[in-house]
Structures are given as structure tokens and as C-alpha cells.
Image 1 (spheres, rainbow, N blue to C red):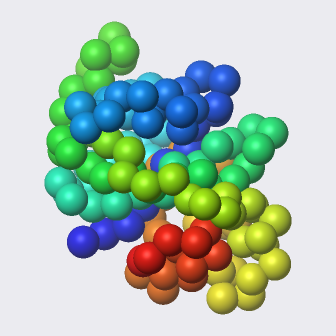
Image 2 (cartoon, rainbow, N blue to C red; image 1 turned 45 degrees about the vertical axis):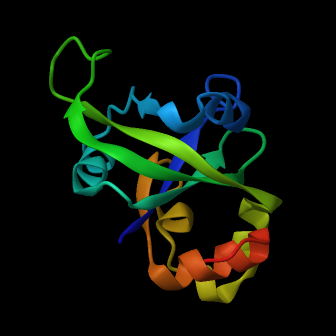
Length: 139
């Protein structure tokens, strides 16, 4: 299993919106960055991802699971980009902020700190474990 981090602006699509979709999940569309798209192409059913509220909140608020692998994005008129489907798995009892991540030297190599604008990024198993613990959930 691989681990990921996906970002969303809460005013556009929030963790509450994701939770409301239940087991049906929702497609993760609108990605227009080639590196982020390549990360989505690498996602497999059953992979897990942190759900990160970007912009003002800058915090990980939940965990989603990939339930459908990469396929064409209906919002892309060019046909170049795709999307995956995700479903909410768990809310973090203690959201993990960007500041929390920056303060933990064990997380210094996270793409979130090195490529802060990348909307879909990998997370190492060690970083996954650390953030789950900080967030109050079992890795």
C-alpha cells in the first residue's frame, strides 16, 4: 500500500463534503499539474491519503481511501488529465497543522514542505505513521 496527501480548499470541497458522500465517495477532479497527475496515476485501489485543508487552515483533517484508479477527468476539455475516486475513512480527532509538521524534524523531507503548492503528493510510510499518531488515529 502507498500513502498520499491530497489538498483541497475547504471553500471548494471540504472534509465535511467528503464525509457527506459516504461509502460512494467522490471523484478527485480538477488537478492540472503534471507531477500531481502522475502521482494520481500511481495510486491504487486501497491506497490511503491524508485529506489536507489548504489556504487558511493548512491542516490535515482526515484520511481517505482510493476506491477507483486514474481515469479521464470530465472537467478537463483538453482530455489530458484524469482523476481518481476517494471515500472518507476516518476523521483525525486532532487535526495536524502545517506548523506541527514543520516543527517535527522527522518530517523535514515531506514534499509538503519542499513543494508546498503540489496538490497531490506521496507520503512515506514513516511520515504516515508519525502524522497518524499526532492526529490521534492508528496508522
